[in-house]
Length: 519
Image (cartoon, rainbow, N blue to C red; front, side, top):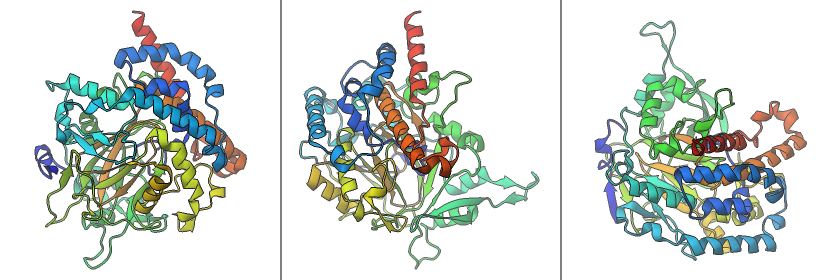
């Protein structure tokens, strides 16, 4: 059934990682999010337990011992063979973890929810969490009458590492291309009429080459669905960085304020939120760049094999992230958007536009990362990157390297061979997607879209962030040994550099929690 039509949310609006190109807002982690979850730290994070201040206290007491023994408890070599990734012992341990999860998590978080507040995103053989929670932003407003219950549902879902979709995020400013261009225009001498046409670095998704394009031309194409002319196929372009040569919050201060004001669950997602452990960094600490960051790219309904689509390839963030779709280009005559809910499954064959959505996501559960990474490497020759067939021997990490994009045929084969299935769902305008740390994901645009994302570190994901940090450091060492130092210069610029500093963030948060408990 269709639960919401385009305009029901938007009518209330005033207008419409670390890794290069990641829609999650931050940097990519590797497959270790599930590998290391076999150990005790992730079991603590995923099992039902206390939240809020109590979670901080537990994190504080456990932090020093966990950090001290993590190196021996959670080791993973930087480069291992497929057999090592997908060996019998590892699979047995992963199955044991699944059994423990199934014993305590249940499916009771959906009890009592309206059909409009859930969306089917998978059809797994074991029925593991096939649905996603899709609350409306009104339910999460700080002054909402039933907010306490909504927060409890969020925390129960989030502890399990399940994505969340928030509908109807509220905006105060217009986020359409013309407004954003005016907000970022450069002036020659400060006088009216001396504006410069900013040059943008544009990625051509057909071959992932870089070119320079005037900002006005890029956004003109954006407004015309990527087409130079009506009888031409759409170009698949995406911006490397925008606004150019400046941080989002510096170049777009009013829109940054608007973005922060509409963040769902601000106690987690706002840079100063009390449950965002990044907020406890002290003056003088080197702060990671967690956003906001914008992601602007064209798109098309029907997916294409190879490199042609405007996509964010398979990757895994080092931290939690929330990604908001603030503008999706529509043309005159487009039917109203149709938003799924309840038990209705998506059908890309019958409706390749996914109900007029802006983007389609695939997010894999943490538990399935080892099996998926092994399968992807075993079938590396079926994928292309930058126009070349991939060779498993040249891949350091199946997820970290961001070389893969699993199309429909790949996802179907993965499910048949391993039983692994992603949460596959669409994102409409004015929807925010919460991505848990350690969940590999990929995104494909259906139409020209403007998204803005920000990263955060929640107490529920603390163990994941620590594990991913150690995985990242091991990969960085392997990268340096393979010539990364000579090729990339500053280690902070290496592909596998640890740019989150999870130990520092968790240490500061733990110290703040202990100080609060001692008052």
